[in-house]
Image (tube, rainbow, N blue to C red; front, side, top):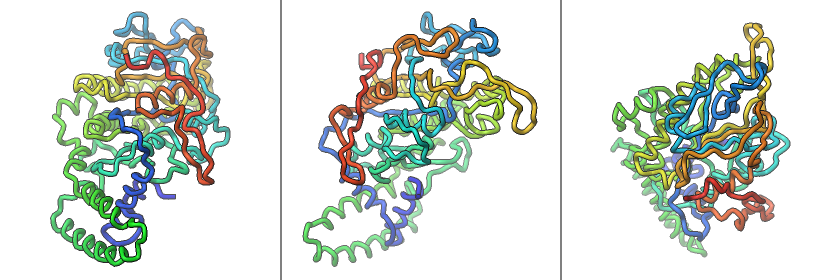
Length: 451
């Protein structure tokens, strides 16, 4: 199955080579999927911690728990009275008045794929599949907020969250996938903002030939579909050659001090790219924090066989702390905090009781934390919500939620509300034509509604 990046590359080849699913066709499919509901110009950035970050080593520390639970790190005060974080996150602690922490999300997805699919689709998935059989909420939002005239993708994954997809909504609702390290000088997004005049001329000639062929087909077009095709072809051409699109992805246009503020590393520059994209008109952006900065297994999955959990957290925390604190501060300082909501989460927390096992490479016995969907911590910033709040609580060991128990439907209802999607009344249709509710329950989290 082609991913979004490959589909769009095939689409551009369809325009330039007169074959395949053209970018214009993708735009047409996207517009056909559009509803008549008024589009709200809100936006969302999801910073995803692939593998599941420990809540005890981030936003829900338990320094007074027994030794077999608490870990080696102290807790620190934040800018929010009474709220304490792990000492690993001093930069986020300093700006906690600009975001809200939820400590009480619970679901039943004990493996990564199932956890991610439950969280982002709202369906109680029990069997893992590499791609969800249900569309995730960002794809659904992209589907209902389609814009046939846009010169920017509506939904960008830089990179996308694993194991998710648009399911029966089709590839036009998937994320435009951007891979690679934006901290590298050679980083660029192929096929957007073409500036080579010779290449533009060659593509234009091919486009002209295609238009001649289309003109002949119009005589057989009883429904007038070819006339509409011109509009989509023009939109595709605009995106292909758009200077606006090229500049949005070009981090070299940022002042050096801004790039330094986020951190001159992959995660810092991914978060900076996310801010540039929503500022440039992209409504939905995900950025997955994984790869070499996480350590050997390149994610936050800190089983003892994978990582020494405390050494791994201590090594990666400075990059995570700086990138997220800079993103939130930048959103506020640029006046984007009403329009843009930032959500930071993994698929679940980690077991409060520390486990021990031999490292899979060295054989050395070391500590780890395993999967724990019974207590997940999330961060919400922007979106017009009141900052400096704490929602929910876990017990003294961080094992079970004891206050404001929330589920994935509540999480998604909150996200949909910000994005202007009336999830309680909208339906999609699966491949068999069966109507499927966008969200089968859930209540927006009261503390996260617009102030």
